[in-house]
Length: 252
Image (cartoon, rainbow, N blue to C red):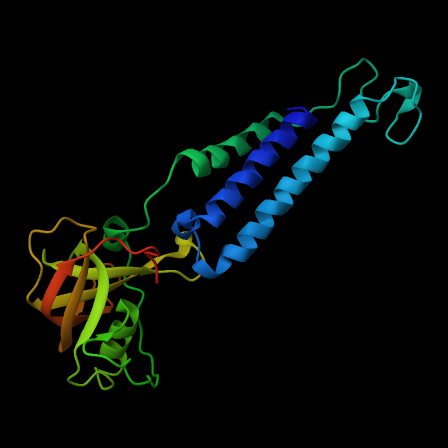
């Protein structure tokens, strides 16, 4: 791989990162708050590629007897071996095309029911925390993580008799019954962990895994066990549910 090829690959990589960052594609990989850093990184890659091309083409345009900056012994460019052949980088550099093609041509889905079945719930261990009152409204809109935390760590004290509305996707439960799940991220999809909720009452039946639903219900004191890490799984008493499109940001 010569220097011009390196610059082109770098330009493609930077352009792919910028393209993913200005659309919602980046949400498949990292948290929403990292968008400015991704855009900045992509622009730096593009700028580095453009400058590399400019310097390399400017060097090629110099006369052979030019002893100015960039010239080596005998008037040859500094990256020339004296026989008219420029120095080449290692062939492994071509592997940079793989993430470029991945970003440009492949749009992997967000982590879903497959990851849920192979990862233990993120809510493990005993935690003590004071939770603020639920948001106003009936039902109160809450995240799967918020409801699961309140139900598990304070046994629903801050929920009381109020109705709540949650959005998540369906995944197979340990007993064959569907559960409601949502993936949570600390940084990126590589550290994604599921939050799992069992359901009682009007449990959705016959839905394929990864179907997104909106459920309305109340706190249930029932608790199950996650067979993956033996952590507790809280339950929700479902009163009604409906299918909904996948949200723009599928992670919490």
